[in-house]
Image (cartoon, rainbow, N blue to C red):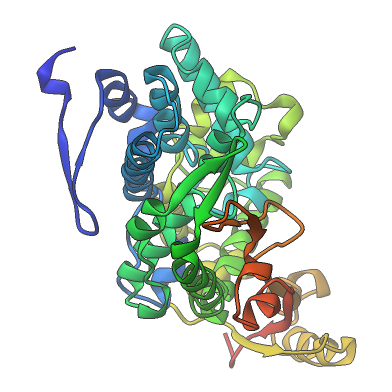
Length: 408
């Protein structure tokens, strides 16, 4: 192992993060991982919270740091974790988001069809595994939830994984939304393993309550904030419109990787090494550059969608507790069609509805279990005397309608 690979990152949240071994260093230095420096962690949320410009690169390193803490804590409590398993955990958490496209989630609904970022992450991991002579095999098994030691899979993906432990604290820090600030390191210190499953010791009960309540706040205040929501919708629609125009034979100025995805239908069945390589060259900069060019395009829809996003002159969005009536949608649609002599299909890009759901804790899914001093294990909702935790496990749904504020 060469010493020059044991670098240190200075993180604004945790302080110094050390790279544990040369394999991790080589993965971080790889162009696939470096691309995450150009993928924003929170999509278009910076239009609401100006500080939210942190990237998936920050988040991946932060998640790995917390995994290092978790491994140390569990070993201290007598849980056996081999060196290979330790490295596997670090790689799995480091690469868990490597498949995100530009602005994180907008790509999944516009440029590629029905491929989740988790599936693309797996493609990247398998490609890297071939490049690194099979040294990611164990990490892939853990990432897929197939490894025989269940608690390791839970550390990567569960309701109390290292991914959530980092992004809640990090997103709270960069947005300035103090309600989301959780004590991730205290949570990790309370972890243990019983019957091969992750549990939280009884004295960590209040930290878990705080974690779940913070998660709910962050979803309503940040991730599902109505302005961020409409911006992400507009970005998705802008890419869909660009794809539609290219299909009809129109040429659009775009970077080579973006042009490829606009021209071709890419889905899970045809996502191969060639397409992965092109996808790996795509990031936020391709999209911003295209928007800057397209805001002067002849097409009414594309021009206005880009203009709205570039200059943050977004649509009006109203949130309601009940579904929006079709007549209300029609009123706004007709007004727009008459004003600009456009078709209903064109108007639908600017007048639309949808719904958002917030469920901080899914009690029927992977439960968060509390370990009591007498050895009993209970689900958090039964262990807590907080009545509102049961309420947090019920999905809360809101409905929204978006339409132009004034003339475009």
